[in-house]
Image 1: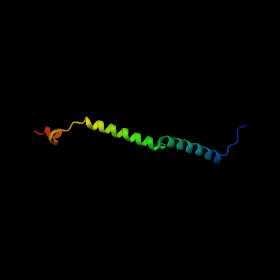
Image 2 (image 1 turned 30 degrees about the vertical axis):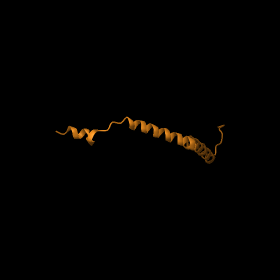
Image 3 (image 1 turned 180 degrees about the vertical axis):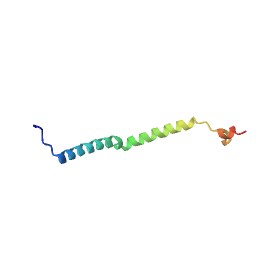
Image 4 (image 1 turned 120 degrees about the vertical axis):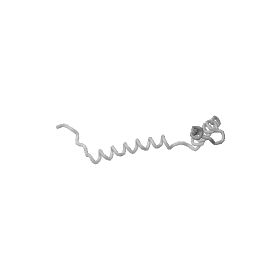
Length: 71
């Protein structure tokens, strides 16, 4: 039995630290954006929504497809 002796408490702590570091890295990628990047993203989303609304067809007289099917 020439195996290494491992302290389980230290192993668990080391494993928890690596998991926390992975989570911190993911959070930096997800939430770590500058104000300029956030503003740019917001402007692009608003522009896309406006373009989508411009192509929308309004139904005449507020009539829906359900109302038209009634005899």
